[in-house]
Picture 1 (tube, rainbow, N blue to C red):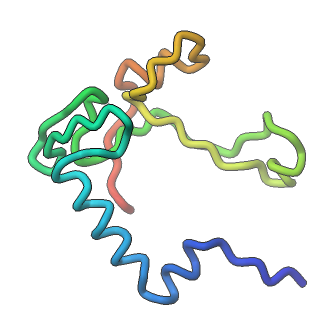
Picture 2: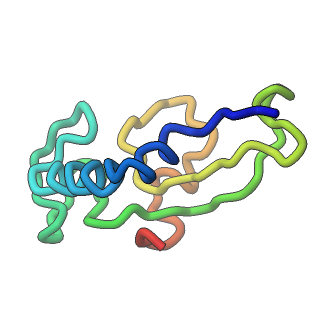
Length: 109
């Protein structure tokens, strides 16, 4: 029997998850989540280089079977496609959804 538990389960069980959520939200007051270091206040509706506000914008999510078998398993690996990617890679395979604001803003539920 496998006793492995993901780190987020331990964080939840120990009570650290709420602390980590608070720390992450604090970063949004002067956003420095990426190397662009915009320092905008996303909690007040300001948008920096990525054009993302307080909530992430998700274009798609689903099980993904296009990776190596150890990553996919029997049920697929999860994949989430966020909008407003700030990397700007010239070879982006998902430019239509990752740069044009496709999808909807999501909350924690």
